Structure formats: structure tokens, C-alpha cells
Image (cartoon, rainbow, N blue to C red):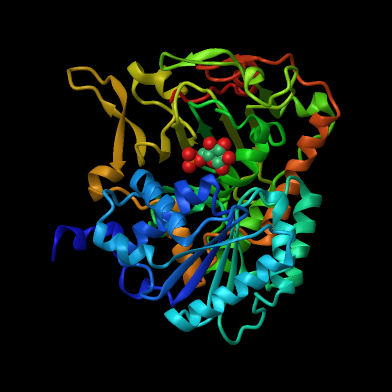
Amino acid sequence: MSAEQKNPLREGLSGERVPPPNTMVIFGASGDLTKRKLVPALYSLARDRLLPSTFNVVGVARREIAHEAFRGAMRESCDKFARRRPVEDSLWDHFSQALYYSSGTFEDPKTYEKLKKMLAELDEKRGTLGNRVYYLSTPPSEYPVIIKMLGEAGLINKSKDGPFTRVIIEKPFGRDLESARSLNQEVHEVMREDQAYRIDHYLGKETVQNILVFRFANALWEPLWNSKYVDHVQLTVAEAIGVEGRGGYFEGSGIVRDMVQNHMFQFFTLMAMEPPVAFEADAVRDEKLKVLKSLRAMPTNPEELGKFVVRGQYGAGSVSGNPIISYRAEKDVKPESAVETYVAMKMFIDNWRWAGVPFYLRSGKALPKRVTEIAIHFKKAPHSIFPNAASQLATEPNVLAIRIQPDEGISLKFFSKVPGPTMDVLPVPMEFRYGTSFGAEPPEAYERLILDCMLGDGTLFTRGDEVEASWAWIDRIEKSWAESKAPPFPNYAAGTWGPEAADQLLAQDGRAWRRL
Ligand code: BG6
């Protein structure tokens, strides 16, 4: 066996995981996501021989361009962004023959007639058997019309018999409960729930999936995973970049809608849920939903809410020596914008496992570094028999840190005796690093998710009721903020760890944020 064949990251992905022939139609083919993520992910899958032998991509966008021009643009993208680089010419020749393009506006029925004809011809010519994956990678305002038009054009097979149709819907899925509900209704008019693949790329990250393996393939943690042993949990997504030209989008979103409702709630629910009966779509999603349903609702009175949620917006500063302009100075951002680029929250899950355990969550742009992690702070040792270490043991707990990115891994902090004649103790880490243990780069999140969709496995996608439950919880915060005055923004400088009030949120409970 070659070293590559032995790569454990690929075990279980090869062999039986090759999907049936199909055509993937990408709406929004001229967009950034197609260029940076989707087509490069497809190329890397092809390179790893994980795509079916008969497979097509049809890009749909407004602009009129020829198939060849689309192929040329996608080659440039793969040269820049594919995980499997450099792109191999002979493989590219084969792969690019599967790339097609069809122009049209999303509101025009002719776009779908033309597409239908092209898909039928491709089935005939290339043997794709009528199986379809539609990928909605357009601005979210276009989702309802595309879904409706696909249905009206007869491009969705709602029946469980015959060729499959699946629809991948990019985030954001709605911007509040009402819009998410109405989008769910549009979806359910034309397809079954199990044909809708609401994507959240965090679920495609190896380290997020590893939360499940870590918790449920090891008997060691489960007895400790509850309010008896856990003091509190800290969930962090820190980004070093500002909004970087995405001001127009961010003004309509803010960090809670952009990061918390979706990405953070995904790994938070996996970390907190009960053991599912199986690693299967509905079993896993049922448990995640229960966590969301057990989340204690936030107070809507702004003053009360302030005791649980702190919002921030960055002013000018610098990260690693690079200057960052203030959020309000970004293109398309209002000079007096009240949109939050930072949030810290204290949440409670009112169920048997977690009663009384605070979950502190924070996410922000323009923070000192990029880190995503879950840190489980255990209760302190009840009593110290080491006089030299009494105060240390009384203040520092064991911490299990699951590093989602970068430097993916898991570390457990515990106390050890300092070598020497006295009984001094110091915290030391027990470390697992992906890079060292597996010696390979994990696949891109989109590769895993696209492959799962082609295979009909929705485990790593979000169900409609789950999205609605998360919006129902988030809406109370957004509504209270919309109706009250924001704190004086900016209230943290780019390159710092957020507003002071975020530190007070923990200090009032006698705790502090972990230094990352
Ligand atoms: C996107 C958000 O969904 O996720 C961005 O819109 C954010 O604002 C990005 O930067 C973070 O993704 P990752 O994979 O870089 O952590």
C-alpha cells in the first residue's frame, strides 16, 4: 500500500462512498463561493477518486458565457484554491469535460426550460440517469424564486421512486424565525424535507465531526459530561479579520446572525446533546433539536438582557501589526451603525444533564487571533492535601479544550508534580494534534458535505425544525436590541479581546475568559 492509500483520514471515505451518477447544477455560478469553494472541492474529490465516473456540473448565472470560458475560469479557481494542487493537466482535461454552463435570470421561466433541455441531453449523452443535486449559491433573496421555478418546471422529483433530486441551500437560511418559516414552507411545497440539504460548512469540518467521535466512541468522557463535574463551558469563535469589504452584507446581519445562529450553535449542540441512538440523520438532529428547545429563553427587557448578553463593535486598531480600519469606516457601512461585530453570552440549558452549568459563548471580528475552540472547565478538586499548592488547586481547574481551528486538536490540562524535593504542582497539557497523529491535511469542509449530499446522507445538514428553533431563540435578542439603544460604539479596538463588559460578564460569576 502506498502512503497515500494508508492515510487514515481517507479510510471510510473511499470504496463504498462513491455516489451514483448525477448532475450538480450550481445556481450562482459566477459567485465567489463557486470559485473559491465549490468547484475546487469537486476537483479535489475527483482527484481522490470519490466522484462517480459519470458526473456533470452545470453552472447557471445571468452572464452569457460559453462552456469553454466557464471551464477556463474554473481552472483558474482550482489552480488557486483546490486542496489538491497543483492541478494535474490530464485529470483536468477529463474533469473539465464534465463542466457546462447555462445562462439566464432566476426569475425567467425560459432559464429553467433551457436547463431542463440541457439536463436531459446530458443524461442521454453521459449517462447521469436523471439524478440531480441543485446547489443554491446565490444571494438568499433569490432562494424562494429558484425553488418555486424548479418545482414549476418539473425539475424536482418529489417521489421516493425514480431518479433522486436533492437541493443544497446555502446559509443564511432566513434572517429571523418568520423568514426561516416562510422559506421552509416554500421548500416543502416542492420537495420532501429529506431532499433539502441546508448547509452549514462548520459541520463539514473534521474537528466538528470529531466531537461526536470523541464523546461517543470513548467511554471515558460520558460520566464526566454533566453538571456534577463540569463547572462551565466556554465556546469561542475569534476571527482576526474585520469585515473586509463585506460591509453591505454585514450591515444586514451582525455577528449573531452571521456566526452564532448557525456555526456556533452547530458545534455547541453537538457538544451538549444526549447520545443519539445512531449516527444517522434524524437520530443526530433530534438530539440537537432537544438542546435548542432546552435553552433558557433570554430576557427581552434590555437591562435584564444586558446581564446575559454583551455586544460590541470594533474601532480602528491593528492585528499582528496590520492596521484595521474601524467597522464604521468600512464600505457600505453606516457611519453611525449599531450593528454588532462582537457578542458574548451566558446561556443555560435547562435539562437534567446541564442544569445550572453556564455556557459562555463569544464571537468577534478583528480580535487578536483566529481561534475556534470549546473549553470544558471542570469543577475544582474538592480538597487539597498539598499545602504548597492549596491556592493554585483552589483557583485553577482541569480544562479540556477542543481546538476546532487552527492547530486542530484536543488538550487536557491537569496538575503534575514539579520535579524536586517539594510537593509543588504545575498545570501541564496532555495533547492530541491532528497534524502529528494523522500526518495529513484534513479534507475541506465542502468536499465532505457535497459528497454526503450526493450519497443522500443528511446527518451533517440542518433540518428545518432545527433552524426554526435556533431562530426562535435568537429572535428575542435581536428584537430587544432593535428596540433599545446600542452601547456607545465602537467599544473595542481592533486587535483586542472585545469590550470590557464581556470580561465583566464572567467576572460577576467569579470566572474569567480563557487566554487563547
Ligand atoms: C461565514 C461567515 O459563514 O463563516 C463569515 O459569513 C466567517 O463572516 C466565516 O468569516 C468563517 O468561516 P471559517 O471556516 O473561516 O471559520
